[in-house]
Length: 223
Image (cartoon, rainbow, N blue to C red):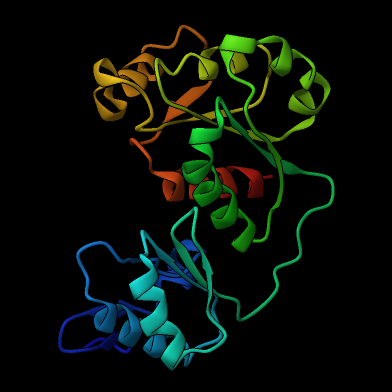
């Protein structure tokens, strides 16, 4: 066993990841039992790094809280967070998280809270999709002031292209599984974002708020 690993009989925890990649290993809760998640969080709690568990159900959190009382649950984002240390944010740079609609907020919050835990200042603007595009243009000053922008959208995913055409900043498109039947649970938004004619738009997987938040944080840290 490597010294950089902590082993349970069902999981090997990568303790060296903060030194190697700048952020601790995140726990993906889907498919794990509440007891497994609780044991992993308990093991990681012996260190001094912040702990993040994604796709967590209330049952996972209930089990975790019994072993780690400091754990907090963000229901909409399905995140469990244990805050071990505060990372000061750069006051001059912020990540802006936009959503096309209110239904996109869960994925957007997963992204926002992930980046916040990494030590970044986050601003949020919700429900500014293309169906009422005047709402987006009313926020143009703040949009242009952001250092990195995450755009969460379902349906046809058009908001990412619109934002990409307005700014000279990196845009991370986050397709969500929001929409009627022909949206194919986010596939239409994913393909629309991948086919964006706006340059500077990168795309993460459907509902992958963690991936969007992590990438935005890495970009915002670059000098």
